[in-house]
Length: 297
Image (cartoon, rainbow, N blue to C red):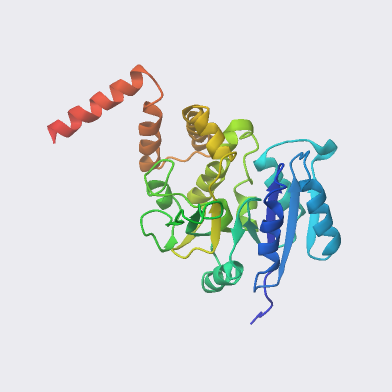
């Protein structure tokens, strides 16, 4: 039996996160599982966060590594995640957003599950939506993946259960543990999801995984998802551009299903229903046909 502990590559991408980056890095340094490397990817920062990252890499030269895009470009989260993973050496990939933090047991708890299910493509856990970091009077909220989902799920099943094509809560990036081979098999993160479309960059990747890999869902939470003004979610929503971003994802996913020759009728039905809301008359026609069918049952 091979008792060697797997190396986990932690990928943290950042753009002007000088307020929060150190806290994220420190939460990795405090992990009770020590076989990890931390890859910090600068997506074109112009604040002090670049120097913060470089200083950590200098302080921990065998554990923490700093990278940036050519000419210090800003290329978006997906391109930055792919850069970090391409530079990584680990068997498993953990994402930690630069304004989030982990509890010390995050990696050890997830790897104990992986040890029982080594063929998994990905593990997802619940997330604690973190409000108290700014106001101690505000209560943090535990959001589980889906509706109390737990255990192993086969390809296709989670698309039917989770946002964005169903109603169950999707996992947060900082709660994921991804098999690096699975990341390779699905072609990595979609770099076309840049700018405001980054709001759905994780969903594009997750849905590729849902289609092709076994996924384990844990109800535990060892990550804190910081709720704040200035985040991508906050900015896109505040500008009223959420629906444009969602439509972009739905059209991309429709093309992806075609290029991958995926014919699953339930997946196509869910996508058709979601697209109908954005397609004017065709959307109204779809709703009319659905109403008629319900009345004839």
